[in-house]
Amino acid sequence: MNRKKYLSLAMFVVFVAQALLISEVSAPRPPHPRKAEWTYMLYVCGDNNLEYLWDDLTLPWIASVGSSDQVNFVALVDRLSTDTVELVSIDYQSYTVLDVWPEQNMGSVTTLVNFIEIVTTLFPAERLVLDFWDHGDAWKYFMRDDTSGDSLDLDELRYALGEADVLFDIIAFNACSMAMADVFYAINGYADYVVASEELASLLGFPYRMYALDLVENPTWDAERFATEMVADWKEFYDTLNPNDRVLDQALGASWGTLSAVDVRQMAPFTKAFTDMASAMLANLPQYRQDYIHAVSASEQMSNTFWYLDLHDFVEKMLGDTTVTDPILRRALQEVLATIDSMVVAIDNGIVHTGCHGVTFYFPSSSEWTGLWNIRQDYVEVAFAQVTGWITFLDAYHCVVE
Image (cartoon, rainbow, N blue to C red; front, side, top):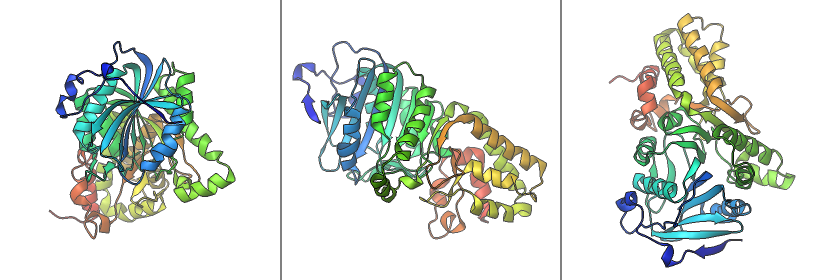
């Protein structure tokens, strides 16, 4: 595998007009771009300790199937071991280097926007997947580029998606901890579905051979069907690892893994429900503070940080508390459950978790909020937390006085 091919110089033209934002970065233009059913684009930040996983796992898995007349697999790949970045199309048992760019910052809005614009121009399709391949930590960061010392945050993600002006059918995160309400809010309006993990992700990552087979064999699937199958494939892959692989993968982290597919077109009713919950929790804080503390400790907590909680499970714990009787609060909690149940179209809990339902939220301890870690100074900039009043609740809960 990995027969590397380069396009002849005759295939290169001055790169697409939008890409002029980056000096010295060019992209080839095929003579007559065809419109396929799917283009699956991977934004691969291997400029860190994950580099080997692209070359040893992801690339061979996709290339074992390869692109077809109706499905394109295209990646922008940044490696720690090189000072260039490759734009590649992935074929059966080989890949074609479409262009070689000078070192890029994968944590830059400009790099992401140019990648999206170039790929959607060269590989137009009826349906589009954008796959972020790297480290992640929910609202804090993703796409960690060690050479540049940078990463993307949610404001940068939303800005980049707006600048690219593309509606994705699916945005997927082959990264840890990205299935959080704050992430979904940032993507709303720029994708129909998000596929991500509430938890730490295994180093094995997505089962890309299965994903590639799904699309190549079923190119007319719609976005919901493929997003749902991505979760089903994940479950099948990790459930059927042989004993030796299972022992290995437990060491790599898959025992914790979850995966969910979320219809982010439904973020408006979800956001309203969460806002109502935050308001009612704030109004009842003097009466129910101990109930909140108990619900937090009893909820499904993610191993990356105990303060990433499964939202559905937290709400269920609150509703199951017979001392929580305020009707406005209970109505708000019930509405949060209903909106989660509506927008999560698929979920796999993995091995360790049994009570995850596809969406986490951030409920920090006092030491994390304003104490030793002082995360508050960063989280107050997150749009979802601002819009819903969650910051106001957390300040009151942790007795912050400004």
